[in-house]
Length: 133
Image 1: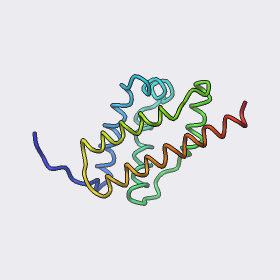
Image 2 (image 1 turned 30 degrees about the horizontal axis):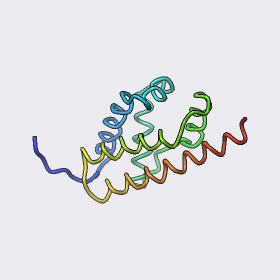
Image 3 (image 1 turned 45 degrees about the horizontal axis):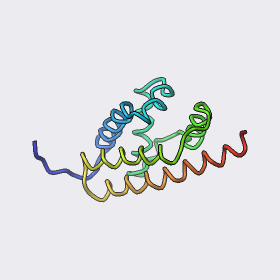
Image 4 (image 1 turned 90 degrees about the vertical axis):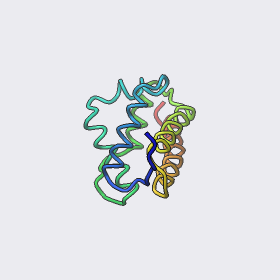
């Protein structure tokens, strides 16, 4: 099937992206264990992340989580073993998923925001390790 890709244009597009991305993440050799043993309710998690990316890409204010706190908690649970390489793999899967599904300005924004987010989250994790030893 050869169809022209469109830009991320709606919440439904964001939902498709988030669901397809986490299908890949759950099966990723290095990243899957973090998510599969941490996320208790996948339907709830996917809805939360759809809200997050919907708010990032469409400036809706329907996200009420704290990604920094959540990532610091997961790092602590896993004995402070999350590395920048993990965020690199995460970003690689995110970009590949976007490229498979979409093309356009909002798709580019989603990739760029994820790059910035990966760096910021890892720095926050790293900083928290100094204070929680």
